[in-house]
Length: 251
Ligand SMILES: *Cc1c(COP(=O)(O)O)cnc(C)c1O
Image 1: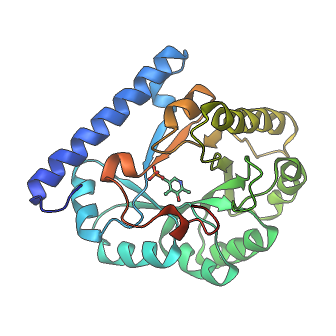
Image 2: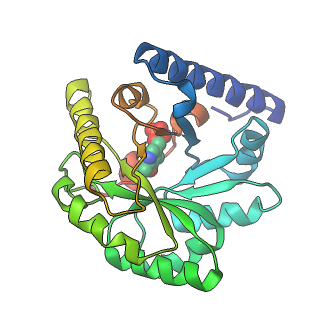
Image 3: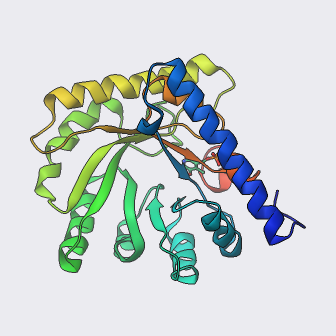
């Protein structure tokens, strides 16, 4: 999608895709007795060139999720005249933390105390906070990042030590499988974990948010309680590179 189209046609195409997805979100919410406004659509923009993102911004994408720091940083610089909220949704190495505190509004892939400490240190120095999600490996696949579900409760007990991190909730990537019941099982595991944390988490940590569901499975995720869905290809078209480029070990 997008290739060979004028800017106007691209705008139209992105708008249509957003409308279709938003309608599916609304329908799924109504079907399951949820408030449609309780689900946030986070557009995922990895591999999409900056100039196309300028068009996406006009179409209403005010937030953009990227999973590689370098790519996100470059785009945030090119598009700095726009008021985009950048969300980093991929695993972070300690030496990259210093970059994300310069442009990111949110970090959805916290999976170690080392990163939490480094992030907090940088944010304290910059005099700001950041919305943060703890990434959970809900499928048990070794190719996926994130804490195993049974580590999460102990992990979050340490988080009040890092006061600039505003802990919003949990994030996961479900198993990539055509077997929807296996995918659903990941989402159910997350919802149960969220419920447990809401009862036992330290004061000040609410765990109201559950970031799960992508182009292929966001409706399923909403049925099981997602409050943030991260959608890329259904908005921007198929990515030119295989997913193994983004998730080492997969594909
Ligand atoms: C790429 C990506 C998505 C979106 O996947 P699509 O198939 O493009 O919808 C969601 N979450 C993460 C962490 C990603 O890297």
